[in-house]
Length: 286
Length: 300
Ligand SMILES: Nc1ncnc2c1ncn2[C@@H]1O[C@H](COP(=O)(O)OP(=O)(O)OP(=O)(O)O)[C@@H](O)[C@H]1O
Ligand SMILES: [Mg+2]
Image (cartoon, rainbow over all chains, first blue to last red; front, top):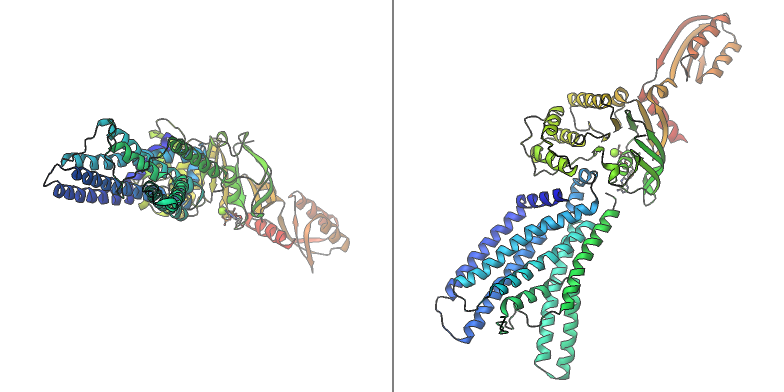
C-alpha cells in the first residue's frame, strides 16, 4: 500500500491539472493580496472596520476553499476509474495486492497532497490578512483549529470522490462530485437563511418555513457535509477563547454552528464511503 | 500441478466468457491456449489472475485458490491490452512494479530484464514515448520481475516485429529451461507449434481438444496411396483402420491416428497381392488440426 501511496503522490505532481490549479492559486493569492493592500491603506479604528475585515477574511477563505475543492475534483475523479479505463489496472491488480489497498492507497496519497495544498492556501490567506494589518486577533489555537477544519472539508469530499471512482466511471464520478458539492453549498445557504428567519422572529410563518429550510439544509449536509465543516472552520478561526466572536452574518461566514453529532456523523461518513467503495470495487470484474 | 481448473465458468450475464473448463498444467510445461477470436482465452487468463470473479467452479494456481493474494505471489502476467503508466520512464515503471511485488533491491533484476527484452538504452525514456512494440516488451519484463513460477502471456507478440517474435520465442524456451511454466494465449499457430508442449483448443467458451501437442498431431497423419490389382476386401480392411477414408480408381486417401498403422497397411497391401506404387504421408500441421476441429465444432 505504501507503494500505491507513494506513486499516487508522485503522479499527482506530474498531472497537468495540478499545474493548472497551482497557477490559478498563485493568481488568486496575488489578486487577493493586491486587494488587501488597497483595503488596508487607510486604517481606522471603528467597530465596522473589524466586521468588514472579518468579511474580507471570510471571502478570502471561501474562494481558497473553492479552489481546493476544484483541485480535489480535477485530480481525483479518475483515481480508480481512470486506471480501469486506461487498462493500467490489469498489471497492478494481478500483483499480490488486495484491491482495497489500491483504494485506500489512492485515498491516503491524495489526502497527503490535498492537506499540504489546502494548508498552504489557508495559511497564505490568513497570513496575508495578518501581514496587511488585520485587526482580528488570531491566537495560535484559532489558526490551528481553523486549519484542521479547513483541511478536513476537502478530505471528506475526497472520500466521496474515491468511493464513486471505485464504483462508477470517471465521467459519472465527475457529475456526482459536482452535484454533491453544489447541493451542499446550496443546502448550507438554505440552512443559514432558515436560522436567520427563526432568529428575526417574523411570526409563526417565519418560524415554520425557517425550520423547514434548516431541515433541508441538514439533509443536504448529510449528503456531503463539506459546508458544515466549512462553517465550523470559520467559527473556530473567529471565536476567541475569551468568547468574543468576530463572526459575522455575511454570505461567506456562517452563524449556525454544527453540533457534535454532525462530527460523529462525518467520521462514519468517511469510514463508510471508503469501506463501501473498496467493497464494491473488490467485487467488480475488470 | 501449477495450474488447475475444475468446471470453471465465467460468463457475463449468462453470455460470453468460458464454460465448464477443466484443465491442469504441469510444472515446466509451455501450455498453448488456442481458439478463434472471442473464444474466451483472455477471459480465462484474467479469471486466473483474479481480475474477473468466476461464475462457478474452482481453480488453483500453485495449490492456492484463485482470487487470493497468495495465488498471485509467484505469477507473472502480460495482459492482452497492455497499457502502462505513461508518465513514468521505463526504469521507473519497472521499479514501481517491483515495489508492488515487494522485491527488495530490484536494480540488478531490472537491468537483466531490460537486457532480455532489448530495451537497454531506452530505460530513461517516458513510456509515453515508447512505440507499441516497446511497450509490449516492457510488459514482458514486468511479467518476469518476480521470477514467477508461472507466466501468463496473452498474445505476447501481437505488437512485435518478426525479430521480436523470435526473441519472445527464445525467452519462452529459456523460461522452460529454468523449469518455469508458461501459459501462452495465442492464435499464431506456427508460433505455438514451435514452443508448446501441450495445448488446449477452446471454441465458444468450451474446450474442444486438449493434450500433448505431438499426440494431438499424431492423431491426424494424412496418407495417400496409389495401388493396383487390389481386391475390394483389401480396400474395405483399410477403410476400417482409418478415418476420412476416400477411394477412387486406385487412389486412396485417409487419415490414421497412429503412425504404426502405416507400415501395417503397407504390409496388408503386399500380402493381398496388390501392387503398391506410391505411399505418401503427411503429418498435419497444428493449423490443419485447428481448422478441422473448429470446423467440426461449428457443424455440431
Ligand atoms: N467484460 C465483458 N463483458 C461482457 N462480455 C465479455 C466481456 N469480456 C469478454 N466478453 C465476451 O466473452 C467472450 C470471450 O472474450 P475473450 O476476450 O475472452 O476472447 P478471446 O478468446 O481472448 O478473443 P481474442 O482472440 O479476440 O483476444 C466474447 O464473446 C466477449 O464478447
Ligand atoms: Mg484475447
